[in-house]
Length: 352
Image (cartoon, rainbow, N blue to C red; front, side):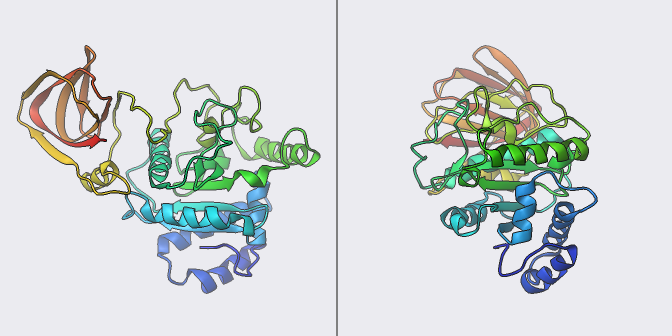
């Protein structure tokens, strides 16, 4: 849903007129979240730090979409982001694509939201049918890496209700903003405009947030910078020792155990089904204390426990796994398992 349509949202009064013209068919949760978003960005008493986003809203250069709970695999979101990627250069230099997700009462921690955020980016990447841009490195640790979709590099920002101290990353629902890399072409440390915008943003951050600006916030391409670390910021400034959760298609899967990953049966099935092609998943139930002897598989696999518990052993390391845990198993990994006293039901996805 394009933010322009000839309507400039410079005052909160303009927002109400916007609803009457554009939002009449939207769900109530979508209208409410958009009102709150506009209130935050248009506040004169407490200026929002992202001056590009504020100006984009005022000039009608933003595009919005609303993702209901029923869109579990984000196929509709991928289609709308694809359209935006093809047309973003017609919007103006302050443009962004903002996705609001229907509130979920089961989400309450930054850790949960971070997992969901990277899950969204990985699923969007699965739907991307265009090659990765030639001038964007494929390894996230490269200072010039950027998430790309439909051949368009995009800086990504995640806002959540769980953010409290870092209010510039707070939103009343899970929200992701995609900013095309081209809007930053003359915004860097070597340009007068870039330094001016940085001064304004930093000044607003100091007064807006209850925590100092995050040390990961650096210029694109700056030595030692990592774009992906800026996508999702916590409420503290301590460094996080972790690998980038984004996975390029075709990369070898890394064996890992993700505890408390969460997800209901239908959601998990949608997540694990092959994207963009016909496929299936298997639901398996092991009776209490059922044991699978050490063995290997020729393909990568993902197991998601939906009920019960399991002692899972891989490479001679034991993991006590329960409902909501997800096991990513690299092909040819030696592994075994023993179901718990109540048995174990899990979904298996075999990856080609």
